[in-house]
Length: 128
Image (cartoon, rainbow, N blue to C red; front, side, top):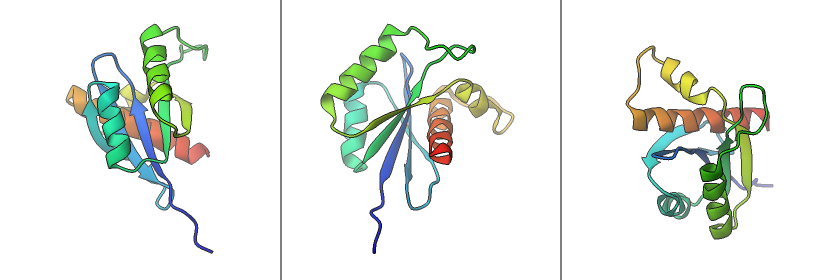
């Protein structure tokens, strides 16, 4: 029996830039994709990449409490209202710091967002 391969999109949301990463259920390996500026560009990627499920980094305080971020909530509501794909939320604490530490040098900001999205998506895949 052949198992259907799912494609995932990882999202590291930011008010200025949105980092994106992709993975599939066959390899279980997340890879940086690109950086976009708004939900319309995210929707284009979902269509172009034939995404099945979406993993969004969820902002939390270091204490573990949900961070109160109206702009992030607006992004999620906007995305939820425009796609029928399952949305999963995963703790994004320290993902940007982890992205910066991967090669010991500071990444260009856009590249940093893509790497942070990759970390969020890979952590999600590793836990599920």
